[in-house]
Length: 266
Image (cartoon, rainbow, N blue to C red; front, side):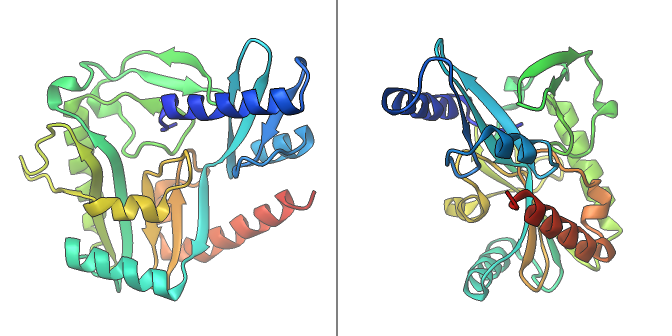
């Protein structure tokens, strides 16, 4: 799970205080949807148990707040939005927008010395609480892509370099049909152009602002030439290899739309 814990805690603390002072007794739990609107316990857990949603829990001495978050979403951008985005990607990163565009996004690239020496793995329960710290893994055992399961690798510098090179090799076989770019929002001393690396700054945070949800950051974006897109904010039930397959694209969209329709039939 990737989020700014201080900001989120402050935000939800204020919500809890407001709701408590205006509505609730000490024994109440507040349930919010992904737009921070109050929902029933039934609605919350119906959505939280689906693959599309995840949940987070915050608490004070007197109240508990549980909030829904999107794990991933399929949608189609408006033509004018698509035009602006494609022009930005083409002019800044030489992306061929006639191909499937894949964006791997990292909010902060740190100085090599600031990464951990080992690579512990944190596992989370369904409400984003850490419940287990697995043994350290070496770089060769790391998952190629983060954010696609209910665990998180605290990568070291060597693992990041290895993962990047693996990513390039993996996508080289699909270069006729896909264009991939690695973007970052903030660089705290990472050598983005060393050793054949090509991480690019997200100019004016354009891509981040385009796809981010409030209080929820993305790590993978896949965009089709027709404007359909997939954004991953957390866990995804789909294997990465199937996400980028055009043969599976239509099936995944139909599954997503069908599940969303069911979840909203309350």
